[in-house]
Image (cartoon, rainbow, N blue to C red):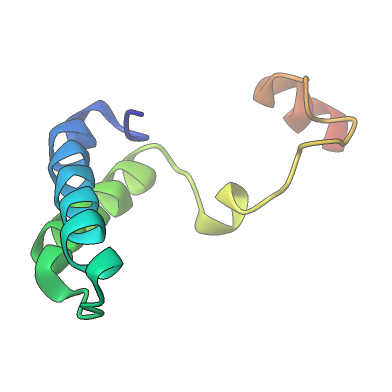
Amino acid sequence: MNSIGNTCNEIKHQYDECFQSWFTEKFLKGTLSDDACDPLFKLYQQCIQKTMKENHIEVKDAEINYLGTDKECIPPSLNDKKSK
């Protein structure tokens, strides 16, 4: 799965690979230390935050649950007009 921003895709894929490796090779074998991927996670997090800021996306907007509501299939531009 790609990231929210195309510029973050590469670092996301690197983090995903690191996490999968840690999960299968360490966690499932009893090693609970999860700091191996921290540097990649921090870079990815910074990239996401920058992308969200550039696209005027607030974290609270990303947390809204639309599934199962009347807004689920309505394009964002129509949701904005409907709520006004």
